[in-house]
Image 1 (cartoon, rainbow, N blue to C red):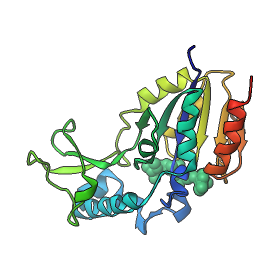
Image 2 (tube, rainbow, N blue to C red):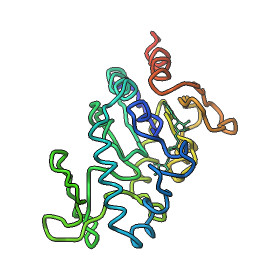
Image 3 (cartoon, protein in one colour):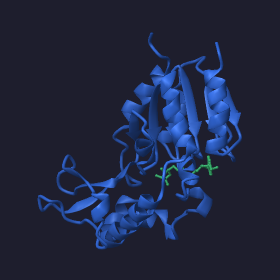
Image 4 (cartoon, rainbow, N blue to C red):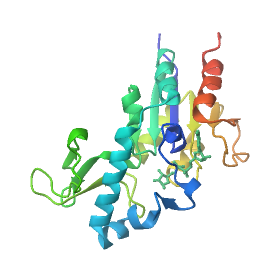
Length: 233
Ligand code: APR
């Protein structure tokens, strides 16, 4: 019997309980750097070395982080739903928790790609994260983080919109709904499809019909949501 489709849009908040800092809780600083200095196309052009060092430090943080119960609860829901995760996060915690379908909108921290050929991508080996950043590919190309910087297009947004159009249930977890186009996905839900928004300090979604706000941290909110979504029909 075909399972209903559950589409989940996650932001930095779902990784907060894994010890990874969110963005806007640090008033525009990301690990004490202005976001536009380390996460924008201009920033990379201005100082590629700083940006490489910055992302290498983020990778070393990521190695110490583990998926939390919220990531695992989403895997659990795969028993009753076809679950598709659309994440703004560049960490790999959804993959490490075991989610089957993960679509990254803003790139992936553990990948680097050629500056001259965007189709040439390498996955970094966790055990060999050099102290000096990975700036040259195995093919000799100059490399950059496989991250969607500010001022750059979001290549996977069309695929994400298609997924949201198919959703029978749409869930938003741990995002301030500030950065577009990701923040616009909530507007792409078919009429009548229930929307659940889990966040301890949720953005105002009163203008959008059918949003059930669960004001809680991701792990607690997912326990509430799981009972709602798996209650006997
Ligand atoms: N559980 C759930 N949500 C949480 C938790 C938690 N434990 N702690 C904080 N939050 C919520 C905050 O209330 C906020 O709404 O997570 C959200 C984090 O918002 P942001 O820091 O803005 O992160 P995000 O929405 O993912 O940012 C989007 O902006 O900087 C860019 O590319 C970057 O992907 C990022 C994008």
